Length: 438
Image 1 (cartoon, rainbow, N blue to C red):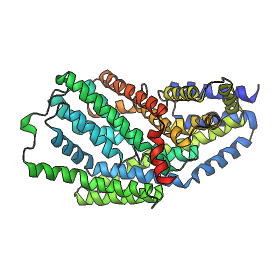
Image 2 (cartoon, rainbow, N blue to C red; image 1 turned 90 degrees about the horizontal axis):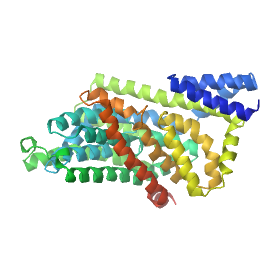
Image 3 (tube, rainbow, N blue to C red; image 1 turned 90 degrees about the vertical axis):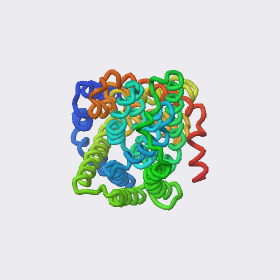
Image 4 (cartoon, rainbow, N blue to C red; image 1 turned 180 degrees about the vertical axis):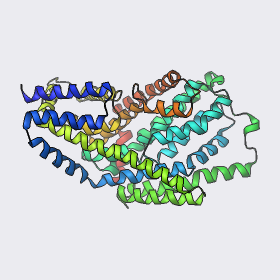
């Protein structure tokens, strides 16, 4: 049996085992070792060691746990709740004000955290009760919370972009700069969609009752100031230092992590228990991302050594289609992979396989990376994995899982529209990094 065919069988076997329910990381390693030992003998173990050491030498990965800690710490400090309260009080007289408050809160808070789980969970805890009390549509509310919470994986300081940078061979700072346009485009599409739905049918999102609004202008101004300004300063210092070339992502991440602790102290929210929760959450999430990266590197090395990656590249390039059609094919493939897989597996395992095609088509790597990032955001909204649905169901048991899925599917359509807009107008992603760095 040829090496190329054996590699395809290995990939098919991997997909089958994962669909059965085995953990992805351990499955990647064991499948790679079994097929690699059959093909190369003891060399596969040396290959595993060299790939693991090579992966861990990526210095930019040190920013991953720091940005994750920054997100967990700001969440434990109650900054998202204060931010939501500020938007809720400011927008109270408008139809669908709670929807808008959720999306705006998620957009701003996404710039202070690179993770999704905590954002969706906190958004659900703080907004769902008042949405239920005010008679908001469960389907639309669930979609807004889940979709808004996933912005944290796209908008800087996204952990996903830190991981993607070395895989693409692109500066993380450039990816950060490129992600702002698509991130704000998505937030804008969400807001426009919600406003239109509430204007057509006001029962979906009535204004907040007058008895629950803050009418005193001074109190309102105070709530808005303390809810927005301190967090805004932390975001500006962290991301501004990266985009301004004053600090590397790792240095900025350390500054952001320290700043989040100082804000927790300033808001008198820092306790040993909250610090412990943030530290444990950081350890769990970082371990998952890094270990999955090591496992995917080992699997990818065996897959490439078998020659299967070259076979797939030659097959796709033999289609003789235009670069735009090929881009559609690649985006459709990544979109479909997002249904069963989480984003780390796709970036670490499948993106390197597709890179020869990307290079042959001569796509701008910053633009392509941004397209992939927007595409992978759908992984949090697409069943059967759709982690956002489970995060939300855990904190809002009143909403049926089917209702949450339907709400997320509405917003997934908006994400697909955003991907197509970005494909047609690459400048949405490329103008800001060009302005800053070129």
